[in-house]
Image (cartoon, rainbow, N blue to C red):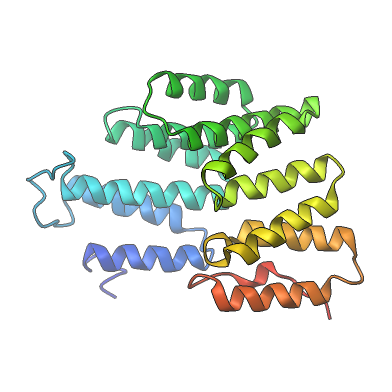
Length: 256
């Protein structure tokens, strides 16, 4: 009852939101914004709120950043890209500058909205400001190229960027997943399956991502609809052993 009344400590209220998000409660976004408004209006007491930390943010600001980040992630899961974009803009305002990670998150949302030209403009501006790691530059160039390839069919160019990312960071789930998608578009289904399988067995703890696993299951179905059950059972076993706490095994759909 204290949680419902908003009288519980912030940490408990935040935990309640995270649990609701894992249960796919569609009210999470509105609840997170309501909690943020209580923080900003002073309705929730935050210890040490007056004194900013070394990063220049007060405890109240940092809690707002956390809530906005939660809103961005959950909005993207629900394919509510406009809501994600609104939260990202608030993040940029709260951080008082176009922080690199915020700007790159903005790029990804724009790509999900198929605003490729706008995404490229933000990406170019971010790179020009400097201090962007090569891995992030190559990854987002790959995502831009992959988005354009939906029209041009030039998936080789996009794949080259993802390969470069993996030379820098071999356990980049985003790069591996997108390289596999490029291979599929190029008609190289077996290569795509081999890429994902090899990655999962090489570093299962780092790469057991629901999106990557779901895509591998889809590729199994495309490759051999009648013979995918055995491979999915093995994949579920791997996920049960190495998957992080809360890993959603339902992404591995096994037909009877």
